[in-house]
Length: 626
Image (cartoon, rainbow, N blue to C red):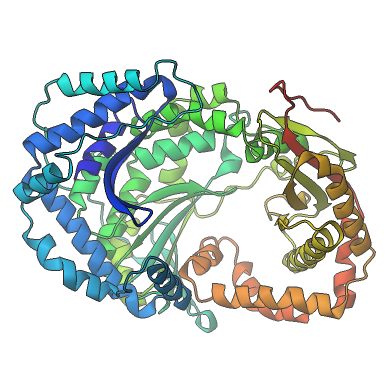
């Protein structure tokens, strides 16, 4: 309940901290410590310390109210019951990890049923007065230790910290003012009807077209007991972003996920939906805006109502923006002093010739956006564009259809097809890959990341994409062995394949290897030699099998995962070939031969760019040199 108050505080524009959380923790198996931790900009550490001290003291002096306890109890109970329901299908690796963790901590492993049997009576019979007494007992007695950590030196030291704390304690606090609870205010129009239905029986998939044009993909599974994934995929996404608005998609995430609904803030929704397994997250791909959620059979209709409300009535509040703006300076400070930051902020601009669709935004640009910029971009598409609803998980097809008709089927008529893509956007100019460039970042730590890129086609040709993925796996195996055996390098490299069917010409294989600056040229040259050798087409059957088996195992596991099926189906009516691609994927990987793979390996002999990233010198200032 205290954390819930702190969470609400963080959304206020005048709140000095970014986040704060309290709890009890074990310290080195030697002591239990009650603590409140907060994250704030350095210039705000004094008001942040004052704020958490006073909020803690407010709870100790005046306690909690019945409404707060009811919300907390509902959420704890729902979490316990959902864990029990999903336990029959819990994955073996998760159980093994939990058992190992319990053993490492010298604890007894227990199931969700046992956990709830132990704690249920306490949770159900708790009173606000008991909660207040427990908090008071935890924080009364020993004088608390106040620790302020920062990368900036405080000349006043502990004296200033303690003065700030004592000044905070001298201020009077008032009782907490709880928000009044509202009822969910959204209802929708006349229920729609199923206008068309098709079955892909071999895949267990049912596809519907509702009378308002909404497409629905249904895949009942038994992978996760009482767990249902729902995704609304709306035509639009990053390709529809204003061309020069670099980073607006990041800002949009803060607006949409933090803004709640038109009639309800996120905090109000949390109270309204207490005890229910519901929630909606906004994200996007190149071509789609996504509204996603996970729910149970009991809360399925409520989830559909909530998700449909987010589709038609987004809140566009400042709440999420307030948190983002407070975090932006810290984010960029971190990016400017870490090798991963140099990778994120500098490399896309080089590879895509400063194309704002691919570059990371400057701090000033990200901070300059307003809620209206997001609303102007996404509001009309969410309400009108072509949309596919994909449901995977523990449900029955015939049971869910009436629920869909009453929610997404009751919204106004939508577009019957995705908008035609601007072909110019699908073919962005990329850098010539025959160059080497050193990038630097400000740091006193000698950490260098050597990155090599090889140009490949995009992901439109699925057969070629599977062979490029196989090439990546073989290449990783050779790089790992080469760096370990030839250079004695203990840190394993990573190898990735970046391809998208949105961009048919523009993909690449990337290898990254971390180390220290004095070794960067040797590492770069070693990886380049390995790539050149593999590019000659001399892969062996043993290498191919060693790469293929983990890929097949991964593909087999994926087909027992609801999230995987969501990704396969979420645009499968706009792109009917998706189902055929799913059917052929495993047989095609099994059919890859040494001879067939050799033609793909030429991509490692074509254009290559390498970009070692390392800390600046003793001056603390860096520069880039081609």
